[in-house]
Image (cartoon, rainbow, N blue to C red; front, side):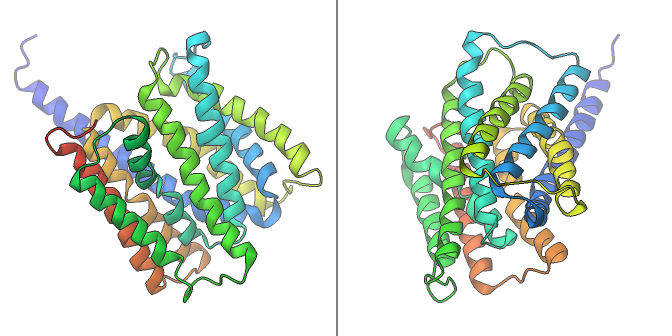
Length: 309
């Protein structure tokens, strides 16, 4: 077939679909935060994390099987299954839930998305990435945003639960960052989507074990309060959002997807305000702006000559 004009048309259509998927993923990941906050009203943190990993794992298995790409991982795939399943899934889910027990969802999503900021010192110290002025500026901006959020004038340092909740969320971001570092250096055999069900299964098994140890009296209530958010997060946000994010990463330039996903905290703040009535305080607005701005600078640093990729 000749179709000289068809290729640009298909390309434009493909780009439009990729942008639509990017918007979908951002909306899903952003709205997950008020949903998690609501679900924890009738569930304990570790067991809710275990339930989320179990439901997402089953949904991801069905999704990958439906695409005809289901595969049994080989020995070379297990390091990334264990690291992501432990750090990005089990660790992040649990620490985020522990934080949400004491922190508004709008604030939690900002602290959890300091991941890009954590990656700067980690990449510099352990991956030999060049710091550079843009990455340094992004790191300073991100740290300034965290300091604004931890300002004694707006954070009650006498409340141990509140302080721990904020620290749990920063730890969640660090846990996610460590998994990203391994994903960057891992030699992939199966695709990220193909290993997702196995990573979720690992996380579910690990969290179930932790639940029996750390929360022997824990529960996930058989109520709409707990189950409706679990269905949304576990079936829709997890597998669908991950599939959309994976598709976008293959269809759009890395810098576009990196900057696009930085809209997640903004969506999370808006969704938490609308769904939960959480106020947008000046410290939250300024802190979020500095954290997101710092992440933008870190992302833009990849466009600079000689920047680490």
